[in-house]
Image (spheres, helix red, strand yellow):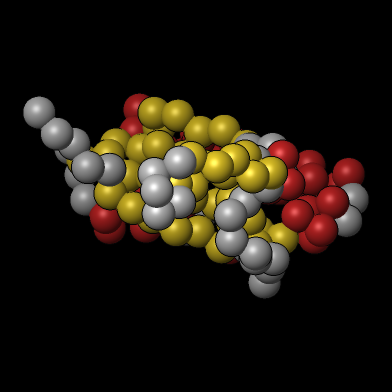
Length: 118
């Protein structure tokens, strides 16, 4: 079994504009995803909005600098993640198809295998 990270991206302004009813349906979609994933679900959390992030970068001399917010300017920010254990990418793709972010034009998913060493 391999581990896969599903990264959830979206436009924070669009999320902020959602009604209580839309949030209820959205959260129900996530609950259905977790239920379907079952034991394959290892972890998942919603993240604070991108402006709350702190980025660290080293300059050419090796000094580390911190900045508020995400490093890159982008309309879509990382909003959450799921960590799954699955037999293969096809299994993860099937599960990811349940996530409500795929119903909105302003959001999307990125799936990456986790590198396991040792």
